[in-house]
Length: 78
Image (cartoon, rainbow, N blue to C red; front, side, top):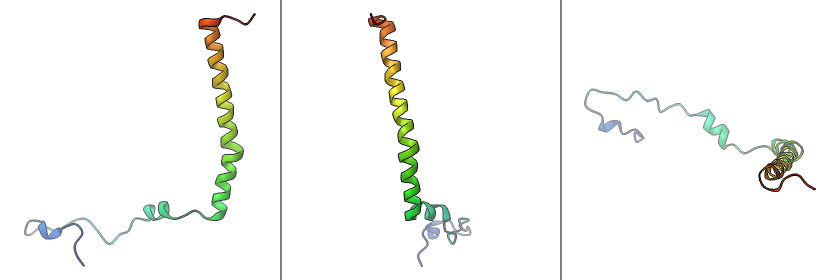
C-alpha cells in the first residue's frame, strides 16, 4: 500500500507521527443518509414550527417598516 503522507520524502531517520489507520466516525456520520423517520420528523418540524415562526417574523418586520416610515415620512394616518 502506498503511503498517503509521502513518508518516503521525509529526511532519513525521521518517522511520520500521523496515524493513518484510524478512520473518522464523524465524517461517516455526516455523510450517512437520513432514515425515513428522521426525514419526516425534520419535515414536520419545519412545517409546524419553523415556517410559522418565519412567517411571524416577516409580518413583524413589515409592521416595523411601516411604523418607522410613518415616523420619518408620512406621519400618523388621518
